Every structure is written in structure tokens, then in C-alpha cells.
Image 1 (cartoon, rainbow, N blue to C red):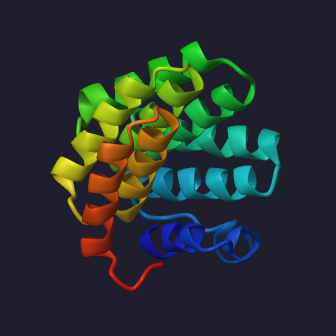
Image 2 (cartoon, rainbow, N blue to C red):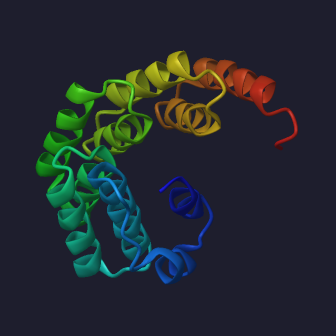
Image 3 (tube, rainbow, N blue to C red):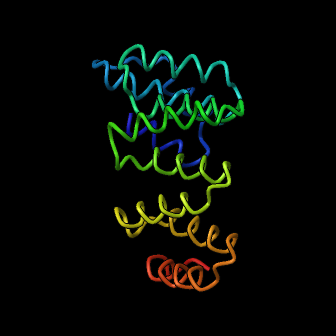
Length: 168
């Protein structure tokens, strides 16, 4: 599942499906993770029904597989069911409060709900857990700018430059 999941970081969803589409793994937990990864590959290519099937299959193997649950939350959000999506994300966070995928999705849902200050707290939490998380820093800067908090944006930008000095 690790190799397949890493392919999601780069837009290689079709290649992932070709290489791992029919792969079955020895343990239910590993099979569920791979099923969730397949679901995200389908999601990224706009095949929502296939994505839903893959997430459901993954959860059939391992009912609390967080990546599959978050995939279902993304599908719910895509259907504008933000309350349902947030409920799923909260369930994942109860089980794993430091789950980065869940924390990012929670923050994204809070932004959609116009709860920017709550989203900022989530990004601050992510940065406290992983100070080198580039995405959290950039999202934090963006939200500070959206909130007209230029002082905090400048401070966050300085922190971002420290962890990623080569990025413009």
C-alpha cells in the first residue's frame, strides 16, 4: 500500500489503477488501505461511483480504515453534504487525533463553512505536531491574508521561509 499511496502524491492515478487495480493483499488491513488508495485514484480521475465502491470495499475489509473513511468524507463534501463529511472526519479524529489527512480535511471543511478562525487553529495544531509541514504553513498564510491579519501572515511567511528556503 505504501508504494501505491505514494503514487497519489504525484498525479499517477491511472498508472496506480493499472499496476494495483486487481492486487489483493494478505492481510485485511493492508487490503483495506490499498482499496482506499484505489478509491482516491478513482476520485482524482472523476470516477465517483468507482471511488465509492473502492472505499466501501476497503471498509468491508477493515471497518475503521481512516483513509477510506476520509475518502467517503470527500465524496460527501463533493455532494455538498458538509455536515456528513465533518461527522466522518470527526470520527477519524476521535480515533486518531494526529491524523494529518483528517486534520487537513477538517480545516478545509471549516473554511467552506466560513469558520476561518477554527481552521486557523487546526493549521496551528498541524504546525505544532509537524513544524516542517509546508502545506500547513502555506494554508495558514493564506487564511491570515484572507482574514486581513497581515502581521500574522508575515510571521507565518517568515516561518515558512525557514522550513523551505528554496521555495519562492
